[in-house]
Length: 154
Image 1 (spheres, rainbow, N blue to C red):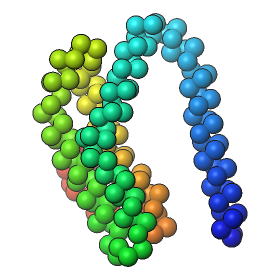
Image 2: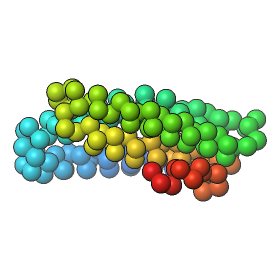
Image 3: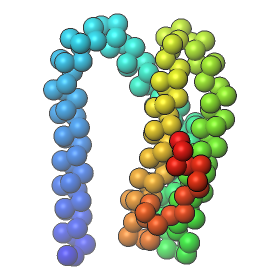
């Protein structure tokens, strides 16, 4: 497969994924609003927006660094890049856990602070490995990276 065929197939797959996710949101919107009501839908929106804002702070946007170094041909130990990314995400989660009660002081997020923490934990768990998976052709694969034992207990 030449590079133009690969580009075309990758573009098609990405476009299909983008369209599919947007279409699913549109279809499910009626279900969400009827089940949650206006107030519940607003709460869900606040939780999702807070989580999206915090994920970059908690993980220090390590996924960008993991991707950059996973695709770099001069780096020989690609799996160490993933390990560093996972460790940074873990340290960020531990530090963030100390600040979770402060989120409860924000009126619109009061009562949802541990839900936000769980969303951060799950997003952080997949953040670096999925980004490293994008650099799979360069040798950085989540299946061969040395994971710290504490990562498995999260």
